[in-house]
Each structure stands twice: as structure tokens, then as C-alpha cells.
Image (tube, rainbow, N blue to C red; front, side):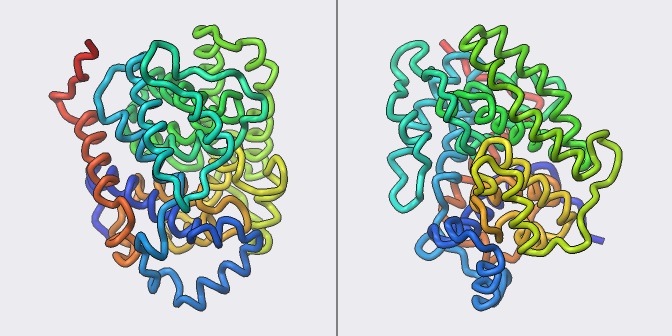
Amino acid sequence: MAEVPSLSERYKAAMVLSGVGDAVGYRSGSWEFNFVGADIYKELKALGGLKKLKINKKDWPVSDDTVLHLATGEALASGLEVGEKLFLEIAFHYVRGMRDMSGRAPGGTTQRSVSILSTKQPKTHIIPFNKRGGGCGAAMRAMCIGLRYPEPDQLSELISVAVESGRMTHNVPVGYLGSVACALFTSYAIQAKQINEWGCGLMAVIPKVLEYVVEVGRDVKQNKDHWSYFVDKWKGYLETRGIADGTSLPAFPKEFGFTERDQFYKSLSHSGWGGSSGHDAPMIAYDALLGAGASWEELCHRGMIHGGDSDSTGVMAACWWGAIYGMDDVPANLYEKLEYRERLEKVAKQLYDLSHTKEQKTVDSK
């Protein structure tokens, strides 16, 4: 029986494997923008399968997902208390991260939004409400928020940071609720909460998120008007899997290979590209985690090798898997030369130290 990894090892695995999931799903853009999962799998087999891939900066770079996930993590590692100074710090890291986008296929909404962010004056991390800002760009960079605020009694901090960091670029509920989902699921992984309970837990947290948005008082009517889409999509998904009650085990179709998964992921999507929106990227990643169990290879097949936005679902699914299982069962060739591995490991240690040491103190925000 495999030894249970320590909590610090799970933090490291969450960050490092998120980069692996991104790099594999992206494959320099050729797999992210290949819309037939079975064809991607044929390519993977021709390369010798996952155990033969040699992930490195040149041939398997990380995409915008990891660059901006690192940006979130490095801002949180500042130790600033939740509030405007932390939000400005996050905005600063997003602006800086967008300078590292050559060959990484950044999303249009993120590019446009970050171009108007400023980190010099109060409230300059705020952008206008955008009903078309429902892509997955906020969600894909939010997992590490759950590493910084992993405990149930830190839920209010998690919600605040996930919402505000999310709507710096994706200022519509379907965009930033994806950020909340990704942060929350990471905290659940660290808490060792049963995976089949996560979706039900998210539905219980969503009303608290709305309370926060109303309390902050920004774009309240627009947010309420656009609130139901994310919630309705998730309720439908949880009912399909039979886990809306948070106690049942998930039910999958008998035949659920690459072709069937492509069809299912597409059915969850907003515009036909599974995983490209704030609601369905975490949904597909969650579905992959539910179906894969402790199998890293199966997680990759379900979460990264499909005809949707495969790097975004990959960065999420791999992060949660690592936060649960560690990385002992992952072939070393997938992460030894991973681009930005050292930064990912450093952030993991910083977030662990901030969140799980008796001496944890926040930096004086003066």
C-alpha cells in the first residue's frame, strides 16, 4: 500500500502537477485546438504514451494558464491580509504575467481586461461589468487560492479573494464563480473531503458568494440578472451524475471513451467548446477527477486528452489530483524539466508555510 503523502508534499504536487496538466493539455497549442479527443489520443500513443513523454520548456511549454496561476500564487505568497492592498498586489502580478505570453495563447477577455488594470491607485483593480466575460480565464488561475485559505473557517476569505481576483478580468458571475469553484475544490482536496461531496458543497456555498457580492455593492443588479446560468448548469450536471445529494457515488455511462466524453463535454459547454467557460472548465475537470479515482493516467485521459479546452481543464484536474494523492505515482519525465517547476515548488512551500505553521502571520500592510 502506497504511503500517504504529507500535507507539504500534497501542496507541492498540487502546484507542480497543475503545470503538467497544462503542458500536456496544451502541447504548444496543437492539442488545445484539436477538437477530436480520439485523434489526440492516437498522437499520444504514437509518442509512446504518457510514460514516454519528456515534458520540457521547448517542446511542451506551459500556457497562459500556468503563468497566471503562478501570478495568483505569488501574489498570495506576499502574506498580505485580505483587502484592497492584496487585490492590488494580485492585479500587479497579472499585469506582469501578461508580459510572458509569447506562444502561450492567452484569452482575449483576459488580455483586454488586464490592459486596463492599474496597481498604483485605490480601486484600480476594478473593471466594468462585462456580460460577455464568461470564459474560463478567471477559473484556470484560481486553484491556489484554496491552498492559501484551505480551512472551513477561512471560507469568507476564500470567497472574497476568488471573486475579486476573478472579476479583475471576468466580471460576470459565470466567469468569477468558476474562480470560486476552483479555489473551493482545492480547499476540499486539502481537507480530504470526499470527491463526490464537492459539487453539493459548491451549491451550498454559492448563496454565500451572492451575499458577498451584494455586501460589496458593486454591479449588484447586473450580477443578480446573470446569476442563474452557472447555478442551473451545475445543478443539471450534478443531477446527471447522480451526486446532487452529496452522498451518492457518481454514475457514468457504460461506454464513456474519448468520443463519448467529447460529446458529453460539448453538451456542457456554452458555445460548443467544452471547458472554455467559467462553468464547464471546473465541471469537466471535476468529472475527470470523479471518474479517474487514484489513477493518474486515467485522469490525464479524461481531463487533458479531449477535444475541448484541454489545457484549462488539465491545469485544474491535475492540481486537485495532486492535492489529494501527491505525485509519487506520476512518471518523473513529466515534471523533472517542466517549465517554471522551481517557481511552482517555491509558491507551494510559501503557501503551505503561510497556511499551516503555528507562527503564521500576515505581512504588515502599512
